[in-house]
Length: 378
Image (cartoon, rainbow, N blue to C red; front, side):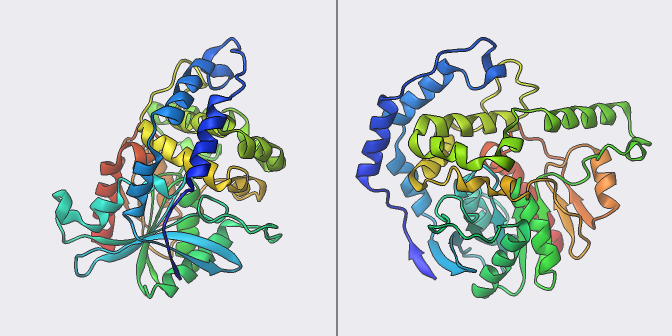
């Protein structure tokens, strides 16, 4: 395990700024957000990325957390390892979403590791381990890439080995989106050591079986219908990534505006954009969004991060009963009732967030749920 410090060469920053200034802009199609990211919106954001955004400040924020790399199963794994000053702190591995990075957790690591400094009860504190998923950010794939597919189970085995290597015999796990797929799989795989599986959402979502909605209220039926339409529609990125990720990778590697547009659309779409009508909300801080975009650009991982789709790993979290389950932003009671049929749900916060990227948009809600759940399962 080697100490790691983020230090992007100045030449790379200069190259990014130059590319942004020389962007060949597309014309604006009719339809606003329904046709994709509007030109005016993206031009303004790209101009700020080039001449207003302070990468060095964000780099320093990230480097305030101790970071390391190690090699597991032939893959370099980068991770933040922020230990708590509190005795009896609970080891906790947190797995970020797609298309995101460890920057997702910048606003929650402090309150989780040092609650006393954030006005919280120090009786519940965490040693936080936040790895970069293989092929994401500072865990780039080797060249040439490993021909063995990265499945959710392979990531879970890697995380179990990482936590064992750090000396943690009992630990909790949390994840969002892609991380919410890894977390219950890790719990099922390593139930001897995992004390609790906490995710933001994904359990109990109706599958289309009419029997699941037999005792649902009209409001719950409408929610299920809306979520089903959103998942079935969207921008069509899922099928494309499942089949031709290499084609998109050329644009991600050569054009920062292409990479930015793609990430922005994912964030907007995940933020509850209803069918692309109108301009979505802006729940994630602009500097935090651009920190994530910069990590993707500097590490060249826009293409490799799509493995969850082309390996067929995208979907819903598995059900498991090996360890207790907690959910922070899981939706209506109907979802909880369905989840409880196949999981040991001991905590369902029902929190609301305007964004799928919960830790970025409403970090306090995630911290609150994690502290409540692991107070029951520490």
